[in-house]
Length: 469
Image: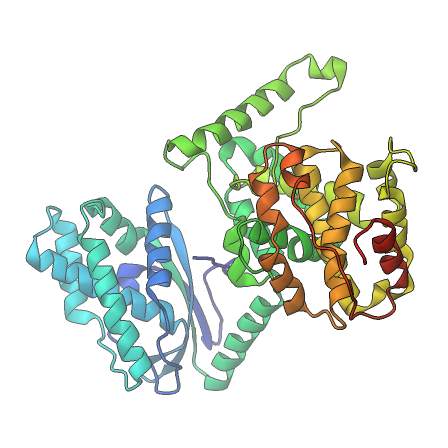
């Protein structure tokens, strides 16, 4: 569950706004909690519930863990929930399921038994008229009942949930102030780009050993152009990772950031799949820490790959810095000199292809921009896997494959781009390839007519390369 930075507890002199940090046990024991009729239906699903329990399992050894902010409007002796209904109802369902578990099989710890008895006597039982709410409440209660009944949901985890998991409660006495606070919090949330959320997440994932790197890491990130960071994620990293799996990749939003969350090597269990990551992580640090590096000046880069499992924390930021440079080699016409270095102009069509797609007049149209994204993404993916090996041939292959879409369609839209990749997916082919030849032997169609306009320069290259009849 993603949470944003939370305010410190405080109380205004006028007592119009009160902020407190309270445990879940104390929060749910408040009999004055009310969900007003103007609240939207309860829409959390089993996925949200599973994520909450996953967070509890991951953070169970911490001294405390915040689950977010609840905003109240204090009206007499009633505390109306203005923001945080979804989380509150879910926590009430979990508490009900824990009470039921205690009744079926008594807990060994008396303090937990007493807390659940107190909860049963005090916590509210809100009523809902919406059929959507009733359905989701019933479904989620069954899900939490299954989860809390499992043998691996121990009494220690129950204790962690009730006493070490916390929420920040913000209580305002004026209804308009309450909604203004709610709107400002949500507006602030909407302003956060997905990559900003990832920054906050991975900063929290830094291990104690890596704390010394945090200041420089934040400095480097903050000095990056926000527009370039946004483009790096939305146009390249997100699309390559999704297309290589055969998944659509149209818009990169907050719901997609899980794609860039992986494992924390300090806390993840010793699963076999983690070992290669752990070995590489520690070997690179050990190698770069040797005194010989101060003499030869040849540090070893971590062997990042675009479709790898993410290593949370410091390695995530190193990966982003690494691919900022790699992407610029393909997408920036000035940096392409590095890419083309060592290739003679007579070596096929690579030089002419790069010059043409950087200069033909219609390249600035929206549809042509989508086609260029396909070209860049697949070329970046090839370089990431095979480096400069047969790069001229790769550029030719990728050009024909991607710009076929431009010549076949009069209008190229975002959906056209996404559908074309998924129906003719060379990303998946490249993902499975073990040699460049596995990629080159795929036959591409020869075009016999065209529907696009203002693409004479592209069409002439297709004719010369014998892909146009």
